[in-house]
Image (cartoon, rainbow, N blue to C red; front, side):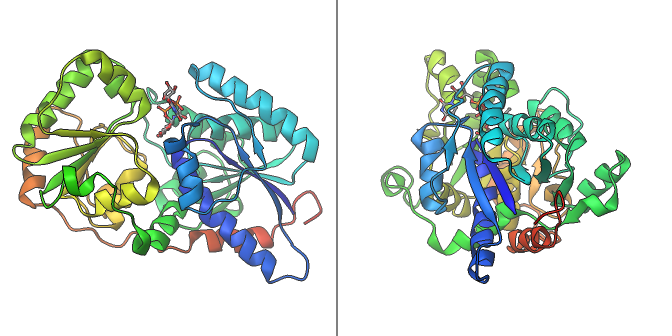
Length: 367
Ligand code: UD1
């Protein structure tokens, strides 16, 4: 079976790593490899600390192809990826294209594959926030509308897919490959080099922000940082700053006394700082999953989530109303927070389930 595996942006890399490891493990059991695969990096993220460091730490092989799409507006980035992948898919004609998550690379490659009559599998298919102001919601909904096989992380995702007309034989509830990566690296976490000097024994929070609605307006970003800075009282707020946020932050021309701003961290460093923190304040989706599994309190600065299980079973709270943010941060600092429960199938072996299912599929009459 010939498979293209697509990855482009930071949150994709921890989702594909366990799948590749399992494909390799499956091949090793066979006399001749059953799976042939190409790893296609779209180049959506290209800075070392947004991409290469993840490949090294998660031991992802060098991509077979790098489309070098880079940054741009929503349309131009998506278009660059589509143009590059169209050529790449014609050169090899895979049986299956695996896309993960909800970034522009996911959407772009799913469209190209489907038009080239290549079957599409979507890992993390079916999740929905209902918030159409987020490009990710458009990406995941359009991707799912043309996906052939869904590997889902929750029963809620399964319900969304069935409600939109997909059939149960297309849907495989396998768990969460991002949690596979988390669980297999918990013993190997890395303390960042600045940690002892800048954090030491002090209790601290972790902050991440990159959503356009929070960071693309200078006023909004300044207001949010001011609020968090004040609410944190004597806690340090460790803030690994996304490049998108850095661009706007540099225009503010001011500082915030509690914020410890650092460059984006590598995977093992980021999980380390979250695991040792009192809590996380974020606008990311993936981090709410990681925090929930590690039982670390988490505030999400949004009014909706496509990952409801992080709220009902995990440690996540949605705080859209910024007048309530201080109260939640005070609770977090005081250690008064709900405890996480086990989330179904987030048990570290989702990729194994995916590869078992792939091994039984008969695509285009050949496998
Ligand atoms: C993308 C994803 C988002 C994901 C996030 C994680 C989409 C629509 N959004 O958002 O779902 O949560 O990645 O990071 O796909 N930049 C750099 N260096 C890099 C990458 C980006 O400087 O390595 C800059 C770009 O120049 C651009 C900005 O960051 O100005 C945004 O990058 P982009 O990939 O468009 O979106 P993200 O905000 O990272």
